[in-house]
Image (cartoon, rainbow over all chains, first blue to last red; front, side):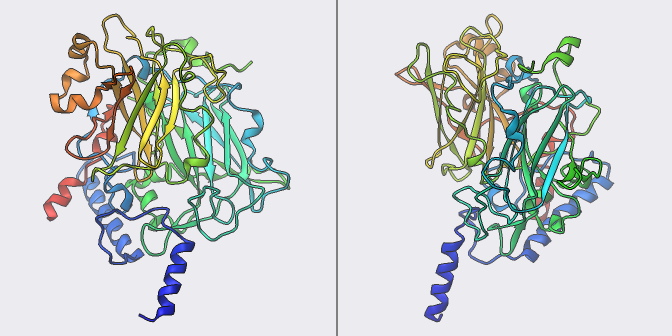
Length: 289
Length: 204
């Protein structure tokens, strides 16, 4: 191998250290998108076959989803143990306006200048499995900037940081379970799962329900992304209808004239196990006045 | 049975570190204050290596067994016990919380802390529990613990340290894998996490 090529490789490795290091036992062979796409397709085909044979549709990601290489050593191999939630699990921590300032829901005003990129509004409602609004609860988001770069120190993707964009927001849901963020449309970004791996543009969402068993961290995507079929994280949800639930819809009613494009995305938490009284259903809104 | 299909979870990914942690996130009360204990442990993967990019949440009753519904977890005033905390592991996979021993919520019940586990490479959060080791009668009568094999049961019980703290490790995979919980009976979701195994074994 010519020396300059080695130097070049070293340099490129320094520029992009692995934010997603490969599993330790993996072979040295460079895995391409075609290799990964074949694995993704095989798992999708088996699922489609099982559906045809009457299997109930899946609604969650597979914990055991080898195409996302980092999951190989990080998923339980024993079945999750079914149990009825008890006591503390039937309640959720309380958050309110002591915890979150109203301005934290606007990610475009956290610095002196305007961030680069396409300004958007992402709004919707947090509902439980029976359609009841989850009022007065915490929603947290984080995301890459318009060029696909996270401010996180481990993200070394050589795309520009934006001094006017951090990419972190929070809010407390309203009485009707509603939330709304003003932000910048994030860019796609490369990662090290395989050669030429790119994540579709997404915003990380973290939500609490009325019960701790409803706790969810997920990712919201944008409609029509060409990277969907290629992405092992999105495809770890093998059911197409379930995957679609992570994709926001463009909503012109939500678009603000001469200001920002609107995307609507509702979140449905897993079913409630507690026996609800009317007061709890309508009155659990943190310390909102 | 819920009427609406739930939104799927996704991995917390590698870049939560500038977003989810906050000041005193793992201090449910100030270290050293009366009644405070340390809850500490290490998170391991299936090869027995420590995981440097996991983040945990704990949610528990106070020392009297009361379920607290007070705001102020994100901006702690140093006095209000909210019952909830969040702790990132460090480079060596170790997490630490300062909290209180949870009291039993019902008389004679086994006292436990509810735990949610998130990590890069973990496709969806996992729920589990950590029990206090002392009240053996309560542990023996606990509905969850009594439904588990002895070998698996011990993964949910913390060890009491000489200084009064608790040590409890989490193993995401392997022979001594921590018991993780499925609260949904809807059938379609979490119970099917390993649905692809049989297909793979058939191919092998």
